[in-house]
Length: 106
Length: 339
Image 1: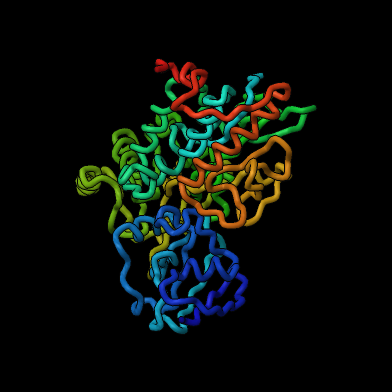
Image 2 (image 1 turned 90 degrees about the horizontal axis):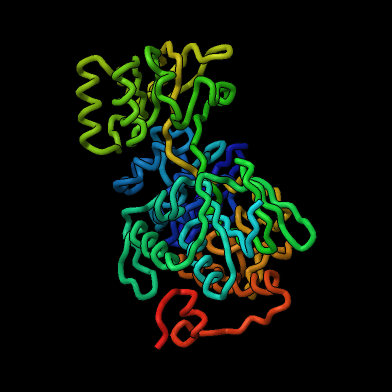
C-alpha cells in the first residue's frame, strides 16, 4: 500500500491509498481523480494518463520501457518529468509519491 | 436518404461482428466510421500488437483480427461509409434520422453505437492561439502539398508522418523539423534520411524543442520554440504542421441525450439499449455493472443488440432463434450449401 498524492491543475491535493500491484493510473481512476482520462485502459496506446512526477521522485521510479517515450511525444505539454501513470506500478517504495496532472490530456 | 434496418456507428471489431449478427438474422445494415479505414482501435492503435484473448484464436494481431472479421462479413453486402463522422441524431416518428459531417443521411429504426472511446481526431498543439490559424496556415493533415512550394514550413512531431512530410516537403520548401527529444520513433530508414538532409542543410532540425507561442495576423508569421532549459528561438515560418497522432474524442455523441458517465454510455444488459429507444451501445463505449473492456464482450453485446433491433425493424414478424449449423435460411444468407 502506498499513499499517493495527485495535484490537479487547480492546485488541489488529492491523497489516496493505492494497493500494491495496481498502477498509479488505476489508483487515480478508482478514486475518481479528475484529469486522468486513461482512454486506452492502460495499454500504453493513448497518452491520456500523462502526469508530471515531482522531481525528487522521478529518479526513484523504475525507468521507462520502450514505447512509453514514444507515446509521451503525443502527450499534452510533455516535460522532462513526464510519465504515463499507467506504466508506474505501485509498491511500498512509492509511499508518498506526488504527481501533478496536466491542465488537460488532449 | 439511405434507409436501413440498423445503422452501426464504428467499424471496429465490435461494429463488424454486430453487422454480421444483423445480417445473419435477416436484417440489413450499414456502417459509418470517422476513420478512412476499417478496424477501429485495432488498426489505428495496435495493428502489429498481438492479442491473446480472442476465444479460439490463441494469438493474432489487430490487423489479422480485422481482416478475419472483414472476411466473415464478406458473404453479405454491407455498405461501409468511411471518413464520415456522425454529427446528429434526430427522432422522426418511429425512426431516427442520422446525419454525418458530410451531409450523408440515414433513416433507420435502430442506431447501434459501437464507437470505442469515440472518434479519432488529430491531437493539437497545446498553444491556444494555434486555433485561429487552423486550416489556414496551420494543419494537422495535408490535403494539397502544392501550397507549401517555395514557402517555409515548420513541422512538429517525431513519428512517421512528421518525418515523411519533412523529407517530401524539403524538395520544394524550406523545412524546419521540431521535436521534443533527440530520438525519433519513425522508421529507421526515414530517420537516417532526415539526418542526412539535415547535414546537407535541406532540413533545419531542432530537437528538444516544443512550440511556446505563435505570431501572425491572418497568416502565421513566426513561432517561438523553447527547450527544457527555457532557451527560446524565434522561427519565421509561413506554415505550421503538427503530427502528434490521433486521440479519441467522444465528440457529438455527447449531445444526443444519452446517459453518459466518464465517456461511456449506460445500457441495459438485455438489449444493450440506451435510455433512448432504438439507440444501442456496444463494445468499449457501453457501460453496465461488471462491464469488461474486452473485444469478446463487444461480440456478445453486439449479438444481443442485433436481436433487439429485429423487433423495431420487423414489428409484424416474430424473431426465431436459429443455429448456423442447422438453419437452412441462415445458410442461404451466408451463401453456403446446406447438407
